Length: 332
Image 1 (cartoon, rainbow, N blue to C red):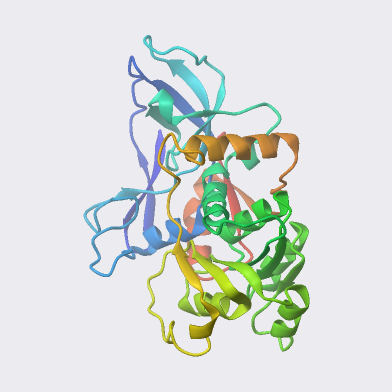
Image 2 (image 1 turned 45 degrees about the vertical axis):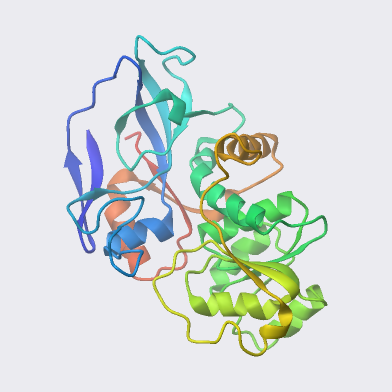
């Protein structure tokens, strides 16, 4: 079988390895499609550590000690069920956090069963959507809240999709007109570039008292600053993006000192068993996708064959902002 591995800075290849055996207490699954989490996967592709000491590549993998698989979004078919496993059958469609590869032996408890009503390509985005979901919940929006979202990559668009599904007023902010157009398709009340001459005027017209919540998904401190600019008094700025740059402004100086801003980091679901743990969040998202209460089709901009993964990584690395949601087909 083929699996994608990153072997060094901007170096990827497909490795031909044996199909894993199905364990007695597990399942063997075969990929139908995977999805690219563009921010995380391109950091891995570039071999950029995510902490100042350079200890970790992503997901706890040591940096830069050896080749790394990449990705965490897969819709697959069950091809074999271990003899000690109940509740699954061959041919079932499931969601897994496996990497870009053809087959995987998995723990049944790690899988999500997918209702027929969800298109496979939409289901492939579940983990990406989950990051946006975490960001929105971290902001603790009330009914009628105003939310500004900075950065219209897959995570920012995911946050926007939840905001619209929850009935919140939204401003989508990005430098790319292509991505702003996608945000409009997803239902943003306004979609505007921070470089536009009337940027602040548009924000003020939509949010006369400022945004209640700003979600930063652009991976730059400049975007955090813009979030602090657009929230009103007692506003909350939620940082969902990973950052490798440093701030070049005073977070506690003028004009922010008098705004009583709260800055939140958003990473990971609530602990298992709590109201909005991963299981509950995923169940809600699956229901919203299945019933049509959340439509993510506009954010899926590219469908590719698995052999094209190295090329799409290169294009993303070169700054191709027309690429947003990428679905990778493993069926041929």
